[in-house]
Every structure is written in C-alpha cells, then in structure tokens.
Image (cartoon, rainbow, N blue to C red; front, side):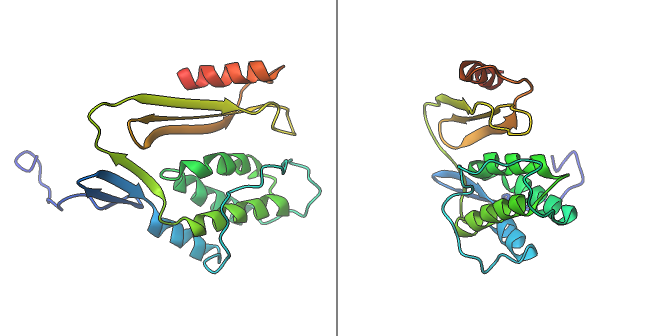
Amino acid sequence: MLQEFEMTDLGLMSYVLGMEVKKNHDGVFICQKKYAREILKKFHMEDCKSTSTPMNQKVKFSKHDGADKVDEGQYRSLIGCLMYLTATRPEIMFAVSLLSRFMHCASEMHLQAAKQIERNVKGMTNYGIKYSHFQNFNLHGYFDSDWAGSVDDMRSTTGYCFSFGSGMFSWCSKKQDVVAQSTAEAEYVAATSAVN
C-alpha cells in the first residue's frame, strides 16, 4: 500500500475511534476504558459508587410515569454516549436501548436509570471483548424476548448475540415491530430476527 498510496506507517493499531486495541499472543482485546472515564467525568459521575448491574429489572418504564421531566438535551447526550459505549460493552445494550426510547419525554425516573448504567460502567471500566486464537471456530448464537415489555404500546423486546469461537461479534436489543399475542409469538419473532 505504501508503494501505491501516499501514507505513513504508524505501526500496529492501538487506539481507533475511542477504542483501545491490545494485541498479544493470546489474541486481541478491545475496550473503551478511556472513553468510559470521559463519560463519567462529563456527567459528573467519576466519584459515584459502582454497582454490579446496569438496571433494576423489576422497574417498568413509561412515557407518562408522573415523574418530573428533565433536560432533554442532557439526557440525549448521556444516552448517545452510552450507545457508543455498547460497541465494546454488549452487556449494557438492553438497558441503553430501553432508555433510548424515552429521549423525547425523559423524566427523572429515566435519568436515574441512566445514572445506574453509569455506576455500572464505573465499576467495570476495564471490561471489553477478547477475541482469542482458536483452531476450530464454532458459531454460537443466543436470542430471547420478553412479552409485552413496553408498557406504552405492549410490544416485546428482542435480544440476540453471536460469537464465533471467542468474543461476541454481533449483538442487538430492539423493540419488535409487531404486537405479539403470546409469549410463543414473541419468541418466534425473536428467533426470526436472530436467524436473519
């Protein structure tokens, strides 16, 4: 490429688009440690207590929850930052995706849930994805769905992830396009999405 194009060889990639890339004899590890710390600093959460889970699974969120509304610009900025963090942190994908549904009507309840994700990030800034060397690669895929998890429109949420020997290479969490009439239908829609 140096013969064909005018360019500079900067050596092995170590940092690109906010992601740290560490390569050794075991494989490649990617993380966003620096970016995660910048998010915590930007939203004044660098001194918060960490938590082991990104979300309280018993809480149901709604557009009209009766709580006070918050600054939508700040909420959108926080959710946008957390969305970019899901590039190497698939375990927060569901929580971030769920809270992104309320960008136009964010309340104090939604903001507190987003701050819980930040507290989870605080305790796990070194987390990322490791792609190890393998002789035999096996494709593994997992999917699941809830049933009528969205209080506002009774639609279900699909989630899936795929790995090819070691770390995940594809993951998703999104609301289904149709209203499922049963848990079986919600699972079928999730399975179809994962297979596609």
